[in-house]
Length: 167
Image 1 (cartoon, one colour):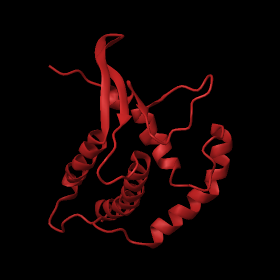
Image 2 (image 1 turned 60 degrees about the vertical axis):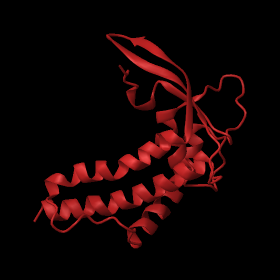
Image 3 (image 1 turned 90 degrees about the vertical axis):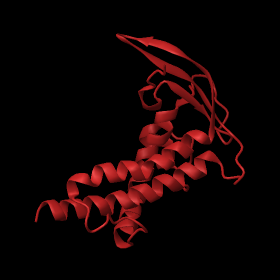
């Protein structure tokens, strides 16, 4: 039988292009990487080694520019089939992202996987390390491209969903 993993919160992540960790700097979680690092890497002009509040202040104007660009340019393959009811959109989007999620895991080697007791449940915990891939694309680069494409589609899809729901 398998154990739940809390969406990657109980797995640490080690990437080939990580900066060396200094004292007091902990490994990131798999989930944290996707929520924070992969998104912030959309802004390559911002130095990686900033404190969170400094990072946010530098990213804010770049974020506005990115949102403007995404709103001004229609992404590829964002539209749902015309005959799909809006109540089925979430399922269609989930089905669409599953192969991407699968690849996100296939690009990693999971080690030291073990049960972790947390309050009233037992979870899987362990380490994930980037594997060398045949396409030679670093995990961070691949993930950043995925995040950029998915955020772009998500904005257009949300606008479309709201427009159809409010008719």
